[in-house]
Amino acid sequence: MRTLNDFNFKNKKALIRVDFNVPLDADFNVTDTTRIQAAKPTIIKILEDGGSCILMSHLGRPKGVQDQFSLKHIVSKVEDIIGVETQFVADCIGEDSVTAAANLEPGKILILENLRFHEEETNGDHAFAEKLAKLGDIYVNDAFGTAHRAHASTTIIAQFFPEKKCFGYLLEQEIKSIDKVMKTGEKPVLAVLGGAKVSSKITIIENILDKVDHLIIGGGMTFTFIKAQGGNVGDSICEDDKMDLALEILKQAKAKNVQVHLPVDVIAANAFSNDADTQVVDVTNIPDGWQGLDAGPKSIALNHDVVMQSKTILWNGPLGVFEMENFAKGTIELGNSIVEATKNGAFSLVGGGDSVAAVKQFGFEDKVSYVSTGGGAMLESLEGKTLPGIAAILE
Ligand code: AMP
Image (cartoon, rainbow, N blue to C red; front, side, top):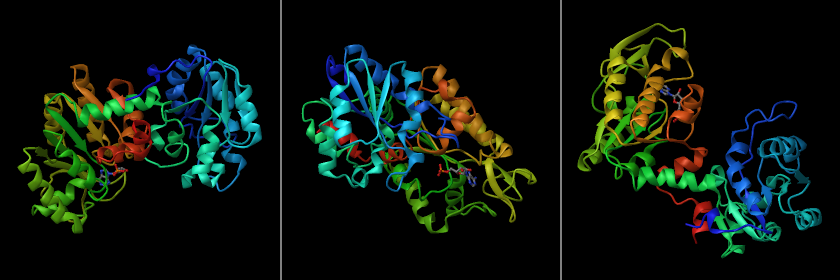
C-alpha cells in the first residue's frame, strides 16, 4: 500500500483530492471544520517536506456553476486551520488553473474551484481527469467520503500517475481501521448493527457473518427478526417481506458459529413521539397499539456483557430512536459500554451514517478508537466491496 511516507515532496506539487464538502451557514461561514481538520496531517507533511499542495474537492451538489457552492467561501478557514498562505483559482481546469499551479511556490496551498461545476467530474470523464492531472507531480487521495465513487478526481485521475500516487494519512487510517475489523481484528470480534431497516443492512450482515464471533442486532431491524420467529411486535417498524431473509440470516449465523444477540426487552411507546406514554415490555410480546422504540434495561445489560467480552468492536446504526431524548438510552449505554471496552484495550470502530451522528452528539467521539469520516464509503466497505478510489491507488 503506497502511502505519503513513501514519497519526499521537496519541490513537488502534490495534487490532493480532499473532502472539503463542509456545511456552510447562510453567510457562507463554515459551521463544521471536521473535514478540514482531518486533511491537515497530510497537508502539513507535504509542506514540511518542502512541497506545495493543490487541493481539489467538491462542495454540495451544484447544477453547473453556482456561487453558493463555490469553494472560495472556505479559503480563509483553510488558511486559519493550516496556518499557511492559501490561494484560490476560480476554475479547476483551464488556463488560470494551469498558471496558478505552475506559479505555486513550495510551502503554499492552492485550492481549485469546485470540481462539480463541471459535469465531467461525476461522469468520470477521462479528458477532464487528464487536465486535472497535468496540474501536479504526485497524486494523493485523502478523501474517504468519495472513495466509493468512480469520479474523475477520485479514481480516473490515478491512471495518469502510474508510479506517483498514494493514499493520504486520513484515507490510510480509514483503510487500516476497516482492515482491523474485517481482516486482522483480535478475537472475539463483535459487530453491533442497529438502524431502521433490515433491507438497508442486509449485504453488510451477510458479509460480516464470516468475520465476527458476536452480532448484536438492535434498533428498528429487531422487529423483523422477532416477528419472523413468531413474536408479537405490535405496531413496531417491521418489514414483513424480509422475514424469510431474517430467518435465513439466523440460520447462516448458526452454521458459521456466530452468536446473534437480539434484544429481550424494549421501551414501547403508544405513539412515535417523545411525549408518548411508555412501558418496558418483553420484545416478543409488544401489545397492539405500541411500538418498540428503544432497548430495554435487560437488553442494555446483555449488550454490556457482550461488548466487555470483545476485543474488536464495529458499531453501525443506533439501537433506538436516539433523536428523541426518551428513546436514546439504549444507544447512549451502548456507547458507554464501548468506551469502557476501549479503555480496557479493545479496538472500536464506529462508522456509517447515524451511529456517527449519535457518537458525536453524545460525546463519545474521542473515546472510541476510530470514527469513520465516510458514510456511504464506510457502508460499502462493510459490504465487502472494493472501493474504486482505493483500487485506483492500489493498481
Ligand atoms: P439507519 O440509517 O438505517 O442506520 O437508521 C437510523 C435510524 O433508525 C435513526 O433515525 C433511528 O431513529 C431509527 N431507529 C432506530 N431504532 C428504531 C426503532 N426501534 N423504530 C424506528 N426507528 C428506529
